[in-house]
Length: 626
Ligand code: AHR
Image (tube, rainbow, N blue to C red; front, side, top):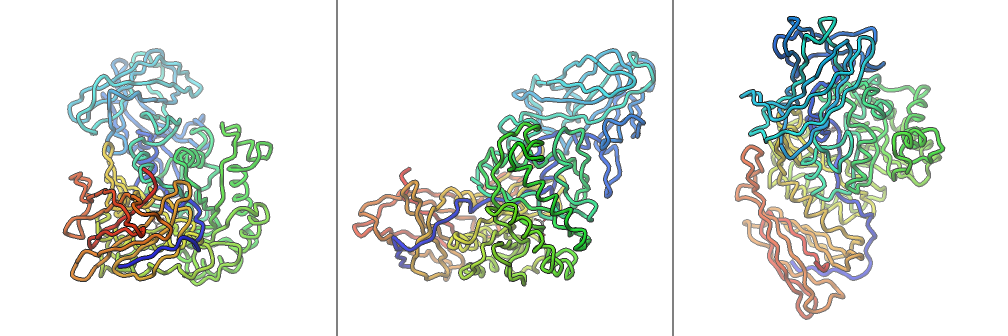
């Protein structure tokens, strides 16, 4: 394939092409990115889930029961765990087996806390211990301050003296039965954190956060996804329940089959975005929930006000009502917020009324109010032009695609002629070719053939970067112990993190941002490509994928960048996969099937590069100085 890239005539890009959606699915929040180790730490109740003693177990015959005391820990944490002692002497208590295990390392100091009510003079003992051998890896004593009438918080730090050989461990808390007056003590909000990403209090799990940071994401769509919408219009993800002290966070009736803690809240999301350097796409609830509950026009204003409050909380001045609350929570400086999306997939929930009412009054009302208050914010509809909506100006759209690799390849030029700006708010190859579409079976993990299909669509988006605001992989991470959606970029257990084949693709694409695309010869299939320049590094960039070449042959590429001088050197990175296109990175073997080759190549006297690309490969040539 002979390609000539012009030196002028391209379009400026926006600098945040690659990122991800995060919502709590697959325990990707609680028990995932959110570093809390204790499962069911506050016995939270919601419309969808009753309080339970899940994950809690007695030690030495203690009797554990749930109680709604007349003096609860807070207005929202009303249920607590009563621990009754079987006799008047001896060490008794409970343990928690975490989100299916706990990683215990001597190099880490764990920060814990718990609230207790009941007269007790003596010591509490907190430990990290093996579930199989009973071995204790670390222990600390905490002097009781507990009294009969009030809840008292106790904090501690625990540094294990040796590493646990596996993650099959739990956290135990015991006390001396002879020191209590009433035969039992009441506990709530029992928490334990390992060191977190960037040391943030109530922060993120380091290995998962680093795997995310490692693919250089610059776009972060939160908080959903279905999580935003909630199961019903009484249980949508209300950001106001997710800020402030943990004891004031009621928990959330998760939409993916489990109770959520609200621990990973709006501020935690914003801090994480700040730590990684990601542009936020904030989705606001627009009065439509997953069960098809639709808010009538005359009741919608309260949700619009709520969205305006949320934006003020994020970027309003400190002397505004919600800016002041942000400052009180330790963030006087506003965060950056440029993109606000109204709802999530309004074309899907409660169809067709959900979509009809979105177009008739819900989106126009939000668009008017948000644009009037914040003219610089790009408001985005939760559906795209392809969902049958002629999106009113100045709004943008959101396109979601979960598809086969063949479909993703066929969509290479989908956005070439679109004028409305769009995000690709959710995308991934999830079905094998010949699969049955949205509802069909997914592959067990991202697989190499699917990853190359994704590459072709991503290259198509990059060619239109002046209008495609960015693309988000979704869903992003999966806890292998409890999940609802198989294909995710990253899989994890209590002590492992596995990067899928798609992680390697997205990392390569995101590592070479262009500030400007450049017009190039358009001759596609089986080679799909985009070319441009990065004016900060002065590098020329070419990104390509080969999908289904004739007889699987290599594709010879002759690439001329106009204006490039003789003997310009560039780094050519080529990703290839296993012989079987269905090969994947199975978290249980830990084998990475993606092969990365990096070579330095030079242009000839006419500024032309020559190289071959194998079938089912992805490549980037970048002439930026190393
Ligand atoms: O990413 C998983 C789900 O797919 C999202 O919650 C929803 O928006 C989409 O249907």
